[in-house]
Image (cartoon, rainbow, N blue to C red; front, side, top):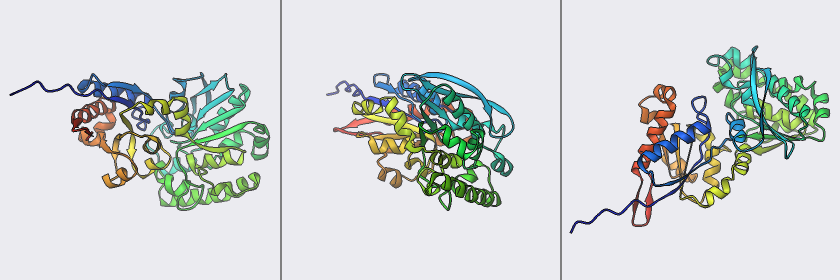
Length: 366
């Protein structure tokens, strides 16, 4: 006897991606995933909660949830000025800044090179801090990530008047370095050697950056009265983390700050499945970034949709992630995945939704 197939069970789906590099903001990525998913499973209950780990998109996500969005003209990473957005939460006198707004890789005007890796600076971030102080902020949260510079925050400090003056200006101000990495300033896991190549540095440039940071670290450690250059997070954003620590700041997970303001814990508590994503899913994803944070805190399956997937299944499943799918594989090339990012991510989300099915109480997602 042939019967009617049962309806698909309704899922409570939480869509919580980070940005996809320069291709999509977290807000755009979340919208694309939701649209693709709805093509196949329109009956699912979807909650959209874009996230950030402190890198590009930090200000955009916060501006959609709280505070007053402001903008300043500040020094860009090279010679041109840029318009940088930030958020002021007047209720708590907290300013939220993003280093990528002032010295991000996307502001170079072209691909990074060894020359830009050496020349890029963090001066504009110092100007944003000054603007926050002028606006009456007594708590300043600086999102770190996506920077073009590896200057150890020297440009930032110089814009604030130098180490001694900057420490005086920030006395009594709570400074938080919201970062996505746990690396120190120097050494094999430091800012120059780990992130320099991503910013255009060749081997000679990496050595020059490491030498410059080593000399600057002496000044930072002396000003702080302790070896802040060796602390976790000091290497974030080309060493801006170290500068903020030397100015009396502390490190906090950028992902946790966003999670708090987006009510992520409440959303996770009622979700059946989490879809997250980012530009490149690799080892760094599991060390303080949005994807790794969700894997650690979610009690339900987590699936990653990423521009590129560089981790093998055994590695990401050991970290608590059920499955991962690549936009580049779906598109057939990295070039198309970047050029047509929203549509390709939408298509991938629809493809993953189509694979989902219920079998004897066990849910298979991929």
